[in-house]
Length: 104
Image (cartoon, rainbow, N blue to C red; front, side):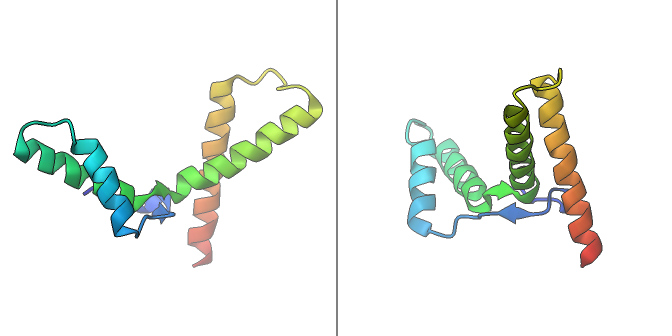
């Protein structure tokens, strides 16, 4: 199981429903013939599902939503590329995590 580092803010929206995690693991491993490999894939898939997205990804999505709303309201991207907009969203997410850590 992978662990989240402090820079990404940890898990956001982890899955605690055992039935849902089992279904995710079964779906990920159902077409694998080798039982040991199937077990490894089942464990990997359920562990990943349990962690959910990172708080950094969630914050970036919120920042991206605000950016795009503002751009569309102004009916222009001011020459920003999609990559630049995405990088800016993650920059905002990193700033939110830094501010959150400074508060605690």
